[in-house]
Length: 526
Image (cartoon, rainbow, N blue to C red; front, side, top):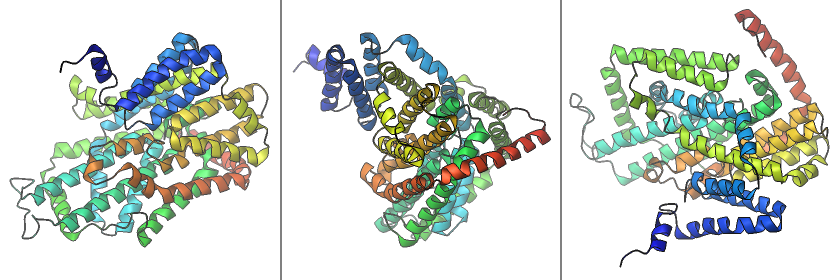
């Protein structure tokens, strides 16, 4: 039968998304103007809930399109204005530059990162040691790089290893000059396959949690960190120092959890790499090492030097984060011979969709500000005093980040707390403590679901997930011990007064060290 115009419209609208989801979005678009006419405050809250719904349903449809339609309608009907949206984007320009340039810059350092993670798997035989290395390496990299890029590199490593296994399992060779096959090695049985899948699932989940452990520590670890740092007027070193009373004990608790789940083989962890698969991977690594030319080695050296510059530039805030990312792009491509425009363009493919989505975030934030939607909640939370106020903010941010997106939650709360500071409702010292509570609250409990963190969502939607049987439910189950431990550890650090007592001590001693190093290096600044 011929397709009618209405059927064609529904079929084209939001592509392959479920029909019920399409109807829901269209219903939102019809409902919002009516509600705004009747009660602007209620309509604003409904818009926020609808936007969170699009984030929670990210697996059905990327949130940019449905969220963007809601944001456009909000501007058209007067919930906010184009000038207010532009103001929010201008205020967070450094975040957008971070996503555009830093993620693209790390793309040109993938060879070095792939080399490092490959050596971890092939050279270390202990599963607990490998898990710990993946978790710690991801944490360290995410503290200085973008967590999404870090998990993308680890996914690339896992995909490469799975492809090697598949070639061997089907009797193929990975090099015409390299005879790797041996009896019993080219027909891996189902038990070995399942064990290999379990091994990769374990490493990917440990690495994913590692990006959260490291991402919470610095202003470049997650996009909302940069937003919080901008509102608090903190630079790289000050941000890390102020967060340390919470992030240090949480990191220790997270690493301990990694070891315990592996030792006791609970929550889906403890899968061992079969010896036959290990031999295949080692043979392949040796094969690649043998093929590596001096030009390839020089590329790795250049990337390592640029990586050192990246860490120094960020630690001493020699330029804005986005501009440092731009220097990484220029240095890596210039000295490694990447001059083709199309080769450069591929580096920006991962970051730009999320950059556009973040611009939509700011449009929704503009609605929240203009309609003062969070004012009652903030006033209720600010009615508490001392540590209890910090606990309330930590819990509220954590719960919302579990079901929506931590960038959105962190942006909204820090803006409202900054407004409370400017209105004289809180002191500057309390604002600093609340900023820590908001940052840790959005970063730590959000590991509970793939919705909460972009790195987890990227992992779930990758081509690797179905190959290793990593479903939404399995991710939630495997993240559960980390969710409990990280949330409780962060909450205790705040509730017991440890944060308030130690922040000033860490701040004074840490900044003294930072200024001393800066003077020695001849660097001035904050």
